[in-house]
Every structure is written in structure tokens, then in C-alpha cells.
Image (cartoon, rainbow, N blue to C red; front, side, top):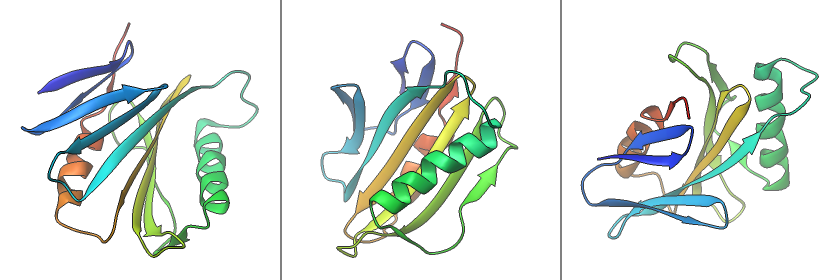
Length: 138
């Protein structure tokens, strides 16, 4: 099912999954799932650096503030049509698994995180949801 998350963004949800918005943040999950995908939305105004640099700064700030221990360096993917994506996986201080993405198409940025007690097969479905994000004209 394709859902509109913002006036500029859509995604495809697997059967049985829901998207709920609360205070400008969207949570996507399955009632019987192991974790949840959380999306927050930002607009860039007066950017002094490139888009790649800007989203790298956003990700680094999040990693530092939340003491995330990365499994490997963040990966920047500029090959996806209509968007730039920076992503990585790691663990939180409480040993929970986390994957984060910063998805951008100037001037919009979507910051996404998925957290679960451990890395499971559900992550494949989450990756598909994130890959399905499309910036559309309002």
C-alpha cells in the first residue's frame, strides 16, 4: 500500500503495516514486529555546504548525541533516483540494534531510524520501506 507521509513524500508499506504521525514524527511498524521505523522531517535553509556534507553532519551529530557505535563507516549512496541517501548500522549504549538513514532531496531531508533489541529479518522489510520513499511534487 502506498501512503503519503508529507505533501512531498510517499512510501510503500507491506501488508499489515501501519504509519502513524504524532508531533511531526512518523512511526512505521507491524503490530507483531520486533521494532519500529521512525521518520522525522527537516527543511534546509541557507545551506553553506554541499547536500552530501550537510547530511553527513546531521548523521554525525545524531551518532555522537546517542553514543551509537557503528559497525562500519556510514555509506553515502548518490545512485538512487531523485534522492541522496546516507546510512549505517550499529548499536546503542543499551546494546540495542539501530540502523539510520538520512534521505535528502534539496531542500527536504528525512531522518529515519530503526531500532530493535537485535538485528532480525524484519530489517529487510524496513529497508524496502526506506527504499520506497519517493519525493514527489506537492
